[in-house]
Image 1 (spheres, helix red, strand yellow):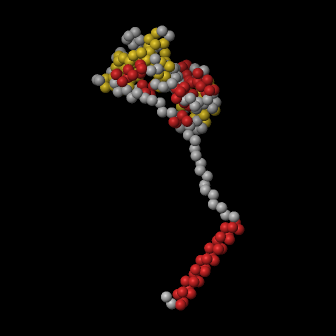
Image 2 (cartoon, helix red, strand yellow; image 1 turned 90 degrees about the vertical axis):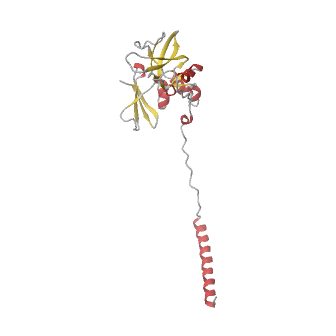
Length: 231
């Protein structure tokens, strides 16, 4: 390497050292510190972690497993029940199953309802010393469609949702909706509801038939903010 080349290399090295020193002094003067960005964690509603057990019944034999434990109604005031002799007296509605009403299924039978295609899969239970039955699916040509997993809990909801505060469970037992309750808690108290409009807005208004005692609830950010008598 020529003498001029060595001189240039030395000059460049000196310049780099001076630049480095200057940067260090500048950071010290300005007291520059690098802070890691704050991590923001979104707390999920504990209800999301609740995964109720299901039976996944495919036929009548599977459906009869409902007799092996108590069950609780998922959707209050939706399912009609009828007097049961046998047979099922479809012509006479006896009532509607209440929200998280506890039932002991005694049997599961299949019966045709007059003037309707196919047959109904009926769960038989006792109430006030009398026998009743409600539909949990249908059967036709040996093929079954059974919806008991969507209609019934096979675990005590009080245990599934034991993280709910005591005052919420008290309101549920009294069939009342109070400000601060979420939609699931409201449904446990007064049954299924029907959202107004598209049901996607915020606030969201839900009308509950409540077995003939309608209630209108406004939910803001998922919590009840207004509860009043419906029409």
